[in-house]
Length: 274
Image (cartoon, rainbow, N blue to C red; front, top):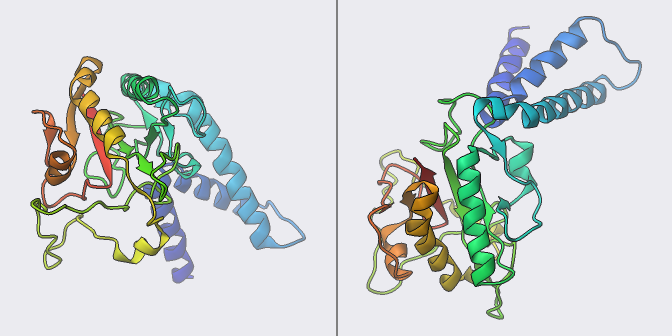
């Protein structure tokens, strides 16, 4: 009995940490089942379907009520290239695609600029924030807790040196790391003796499309726009690895190093607004 209790408690915690509202869906499912809701067929399948139904309902409700918490949802599917959209519907399924209206406007302004300057360019968002409550952590990020931070994917080219719209080296946008070229070096040693978030994710690399290469021209243009015109849209801080900013030929006082204790930023651009 105690093991089942620990399992249920752990499930609620994990689902809450990962999706914010998944734990609530789990509790609602458990309450309905315990209240006498029965089924003659597979109990496991029924409970799973009941959970996903409740979770889908809560996600739909979050979409319409998030604005009361100062958040709006980014588009879940790639469409109009003049607007920013999430890299994968997975971020929407996990409720990690919510931002403040001002940050959405900043992202759309960047996407519009990139599409106008490089027709067909698709600007993709990665982790943003949950729909409710400032201060609720979006793990494993150290920030992303108020709707004012957003990760943006790099732009890539294939093995034919052709830009690939709406695609990234990594299936989730993260962990397709770049590497310093000769004459540059990492700011940190990636020392694994001390615990930090600076993961190399070696086990994940086989999932990446290694034929894809960074589109330096587009990525540097996006980074430059964010650091200049982006400030008029509220962009106040940008995180990217120093060696990569140097290789891309972009420098600005708001382009900063996140520190050796935080995650690497040579697989995406982190922005935040005032």
